[in-house]
Image (cartoon, rainbow, N blue to C red; front, side, top):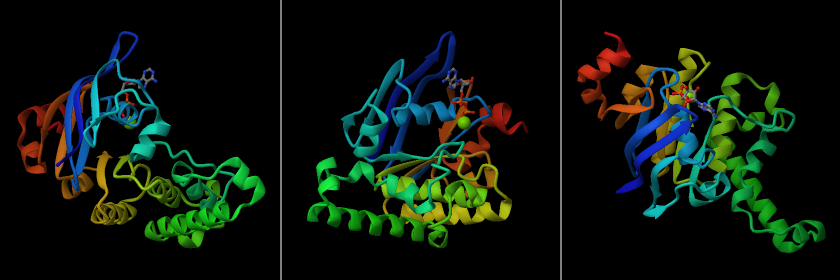
Amino acid sequence: MTLLEVRGLGKQFGGLHAVRDVDLDVREGEITAIIGPNGAGKSTVFNLLSGFYRPTAGTVTFKGRDITGKKPYTTVRDGIARTFQTTNLFEDSTVLDNVLSGRIVRSRSTVFGAVLQTPSFRREEQYNLTKAMEALEFAGIAHYRDDLAGEVPQEVQKRVAIAVALATEPDLLLLDEPAGGITEDETVGFGDLIRQIVARGITVCLVEHKMSMIMSLADRILVLDHGQTIAFGTPDEIKRDPKVIEAYLGA
Ligand code: ADP
Ligand code: MG
């Protein structure tokens, strides 16, 4: 089943076509990778899918519903979570509090409930804590729960960002360079984590430069260059595509 359907997607910044006429079908339960040189438009596509940017052309359909131009708060409620290329945690808050922030989109409590500490508010608070701890354990970082997010190692911060996203209970997770700025050894661990995420029934869309990771993980790969699609296919198809070899792999 197609979970996400993108048609003719475009984003212009003044005269610059950052993304132009991109089509993409993300199938449920798969890992779809987006690759391409720096400035190809990969992060812009994620910003368009998650509502951080409004498309200047095209449509985005998620679970059969048109979500084109919806705001981030709405898309995350609909079930699209994301991480950022540059990790954006609340650095002066604990790791646990960061992950709890991901629960806000699923919370029903009102400010009155919080002030009055009603039983239903307390139940929800307890439930959110359980969910946040589950996400931390899943991401392998539960022992960092009380550390300040700004003070844990880079690799842990990347895992915290994934845990925050998981805490929103997404159906689709967009990961923007999850292995950026970490060592080769740590990269293997992220590959494993992404496989576990998919095993939980979450569909993954992945932007990454580390080709070994892409080739071993991705079911399908979209190759962008100058905002446009130059190829879409399985890792085997992409590896053999002359356009990809010329424009991206440089062989
Ligand atoms: P990638 O993630 O593939 O490296 P980006 O999507 O970040 O590329 O950027 C694609 C192009 O769009 C680049 O030329 C970049 O400078 C431009 N761009 C991205 N965001 C903005 C913005 N908010 N304003 C102006 N130009 C932008
Ligand atoms: Mg980018």
